[in-house]
Figure 1 (tube, helix red, strand yellow):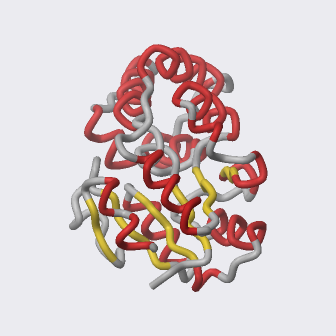
Figure 2: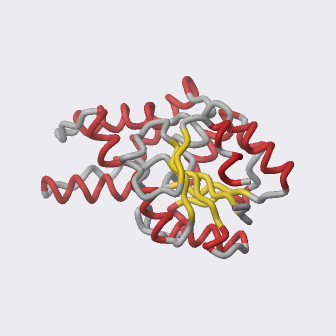
Length: 214
């Protein structure tokens, strides 16, 4: 099926940020007295917005995270991005094929607009994404697994949900895309096909994606 819009998740799909940010998140939560392993961070928070971290910690412990939690966490993550972040292998080739095929695309991320900008600037992906094709959970209030972000992106791009293909690498993202009534393709870079259950297709190499959406 040829789609009228391809919506990319950002972290783990466009930029290889999940190992960096989840290692920092696990360490920071542990530092604050909420012991968390890297694997637990991936399981509980990968693909989610920051409010998910606050909500989960409060539900489990009855304690609120510090008021400057987000600011401190992002400062640590952005510093690590500047040192280590790379684009996911093959993603610029995929974007080039979408441009050549005349298929619009955008990014819809649970991360903040600042996080997206920092990552794209570091990796050169800012050259591929116009500001009006970048959407964040900040724009809608509720992050994945709620469908709000994907529906917002489709509306702003002028495409009906059923004509959109979403590219995701997290269970929360797959759930959000399905709830939005969109086809979703699971990138098995960090999660297994079983963890991304419900996706319409799976791929482990970006070179396979054009064959699914073009």
